[in-house]
Each structure stands twice: as C-alpha cells, then as structure tokens.
Image (cartoon, rainbow, N blue to C red; front, side, top):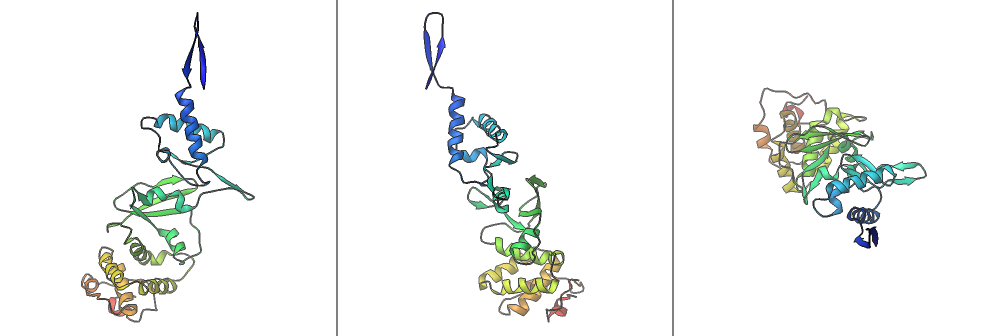
Length: 258
C-alpha cells in the first residue's frame, strides 16, 4: 500500500508507515496465540530496538479490550465463558518465574504446593515460589507472589524433592488438616521414591533446619529402612527436642520429636 504526498508540482509515493506495519505484525502474531496464555513483548520475536513501539501497541490493545494486562510487561488474551471473564491458570501466571532459557529457576511451594500435593483443599490467593537467592514480593492480577530462599541448588531433577522437604518444613502450618494426616501422606510419597532419590533427599535435607532433619530422619527410618540416615542423625544436637505434634511415628523419641 502506498500513500500519496503532494508537492507543488507532483506527487511522491512513499512506503506504508513502518509503525502501522509493526502494529499489524503484532496483531497477527497475537491472533495466533491461544487465549489465557501469558506473554511479554519479547515472546513476539520482533526486531530488536522496537520494544517501545511494541509496548505502546500492546497497551492500545489493552485499552480496546483486545488484551488484558496482568502486570507490567505481561499480557494475555482473556477467555470469556458463560460465567464471565476467566483468569489464566495459576501456573501460567508464574511460568516465567519457574523456567527461563530452558532451565528451572524456581518451583511452587507454600499453600499452592499443599493444594497440589493433596494436603489441603484450601485455594490460596498468595503464591510462594522457591528460588536461589532473594527477591521482593510482587503482584500479578489478583495474586500476591512471595519468594522463599532455597539453600540447595534448584534443578529440574530435584524440584519435587525440595517440595517434599518444604512440606516437612511447614508441616505445622498446613491448613484444613491434621499434622498426623500430613506426616502420613508425605511419608508415603517419600516411600514411593526410587532409592537414589531417597538418598538424594537425605543429602538435600541436610541444608534444612534441625526440625526438618529430625522429621525426615524419623520418616526415613520408619518408612524406608534401607536408606542410611546416619548423616541426618549426626547433624542434630543430641540434647535438642523438636515440637512437631505427631503421634504416628513410633520412633519419634529416637529423634527427640514430641
């Protein structure tokens, strides 16, 4: 398409405005995206140096109701049902905080983890993510997102093991259940692990606080007698006691658990 520019004696035809072409490219790429998939302008794979124009175009689409802005730099095409406009899935909202450049950088923990593990039925409006290092809380949509520092290196191979350890760490804070039910459910999940993962769990557990090490050691000793837990026992102060409140571990006294 060409537009005419009048001069005194003749008309000069110039190429279509580059910004208009960029806006059309953005719209075409967004049209191909599924609804409720969260993305940033970087996900559109446009030429470098056009970020400011891309953001302006996306914000105009938000104003027209074509997109919803989840947080700064994060957008999605809303899905509308008979019940109204639906939010993206929780995992979709935080996916960029869990994976980056093909590797795991964080994992779900806290109340959302308890829900996923079947430890509670309560649905949280705060999401917690385990990370290496520290980061301030942020807000996305209706959710507040908190970050919990994890002393062990986070990888795709040990994420589930770290989640099991986090459940033991917060065993007394899991809502809508009892400590005994939580201990039994987690113990059964640990018992179902392959032997090498059980051993890895012990190694990772050594970087947690003493109460977690004691509880892990007692569970391993009772549910996984083939696993060596001497390192956990050795790491504990023999005169310290750990108030957990469980009655289903027959060997609790051996680990100073009460």
